[in-house]
Structures are given as structure tokens and as C-alpha cells.
Length: 329
Image (cartoon, rainbow, N blue to C red; front, side, top):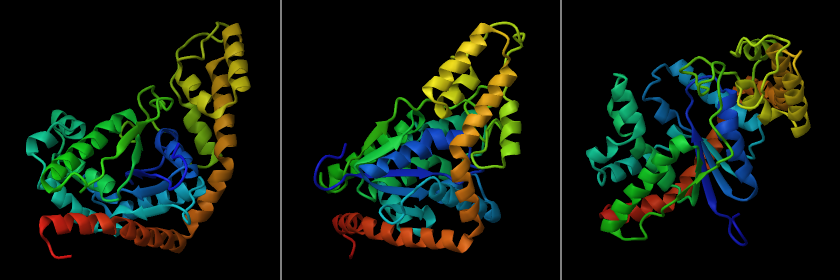
């Protein structure tokens, strides 16, 4: 709760790294949009972050506009909040350089993404190593109060706070505001078709906005055990149950749970119920998405206007750190 008076500022970003799926929606986009009621929100499409792995210009544009249409379709209020493409505010790279000059390499080597990439023998370019610095710039340059993140992203906010502390120790305690990570405990890891975390890299995702027949095909491909039709089954703890809980009413969940436990109902029936619940929940937003996605000029205009507002929001922080570094402003 932001309380009375001036609203606090919240920031959320997402990489354009592929088709938007239900895991993105439930784990990040939906919770972030809920902050619109109580906070002044900054939302951005992190295309500069995506560049660490995505080098195809056509895919970068496609994924970026897909995300823009998705946020609009789901109810983002671009008039009262800030929504922009990261690369449209190039000053973030300047700010990242200032932070980098106060950040040790050993500190960056502790980042989960860097350690995971190195352990998996993946390409470790400079962007991977300095990823937390750019993310810190995203957060700190806009003077935000809170950063809603999943548990797997908490480290990046903590690293941003550490970097801000290093700068403040040299340039003055009031140089950079220290934001707080906000972890929504009720938003758990969203399982994919195979039970692992839903991820494009695993190929186990359920697209958020696709034709109903595609959605149904993906839902019906969820892996389940081979319990016979007549045997009782437990909805709780199953992939279907975890997903169904996000889209069904409490009464619907209890009904399906009871029918499965009684026997005579198979996992195929449960998948049908899951498909119907998802389709019902996102149907109207899906229609809006396809309308927005057809108008690329509108999407580009929304992002351009958002970048102008983001630049204005960042200006005081840039001016302050430049002045304290002895640069002309």
C-alpha cells in the first residue's frame, strides 16, 4: 500500500525472447499490472538484455511488438503509467557505465545467470557478465521505490542495491535511492507441459495468445501418469491442478478435484476442463491482442511516447550522478 499523498514508483521489465506464454503472464505480467492501482508504474521491454542471446533483428522486432500488444491487451494504462522499449532510452547504457566503474568483477561473477551459463558451457559474452549492471541501471536510473520480482530475480535487485551502496559511499548517501524487492509469495513457479518450470528454452510452454485449437492441442499434451480411468486421482500437486487453480473458481476446482478422486474420470477430462477455463479467462484479451498486433504503427507510437516519459523520469538521476562525478551538466 503506497499510503496517502504521492504514490510510490514501481518498476517491472520483461525480455522479448520468444512467444509470450502462460508462465510469463501468471508469474510476471499479471502481478505487475495489479500495481497500477496503487503505484506510479514503469514497465519496459528489455530488448537490450535480450541482445545477450538474440541477434536476429527481425525476431527482435517481432518479439518486442508481440510484448507491446500483450501488455496493452491485458489492460496496461499507458496514459497514466510509463511503458517503453529499453533501447529507446539509450541513457541507460550511460548510467550502467557509471555503475560499472564502482562494481568489481568478482561481484558480478556471483550472479546466477553468469554461473549457470558458465556451468552449462554456454557462450559467456561480456553482456552476460555485466547483465546485473544493466539491470541495476534499469532500476536505479528511474528512482523507483519497489521492484516486484519472482524469487529467481530477487538477486538482481539485491545486486542493484549493493551497487547503489558502493556509489553512495563515494559520492554521497543521497546519490542513488535504494529500491526494495517485493516478492509475491503466492505466485509460485508455473509448471510447463512436462512438469518443469514453463520455459521457452524447454519447449514446454503454453502460448498465452493463440487460436483456441492450438491452445487446446497444447493443453491436451500435458504429461500425466497412467492411472486407469476408473481409479481415483489427486488434482492437488499435479501439473493440471497447479494450472487449473489459476484460471478456475474455487467451486470449479473443488468439483473437478472431487470427480477425479471418486474415479471414473480421467486426466483427459481434467485437461478439457483446464482448456475451457484458460480459454474463458483470456478470450477477450486474446481478441484485443490480435487487433493491437495488426497495427504496428500504433504500437510503435505507444512505445515512442513511453520512451519520452521515461527519459524525463530518468533526467534528475542522470543529472545528479553526472554532477557528482565532476562531469558538465
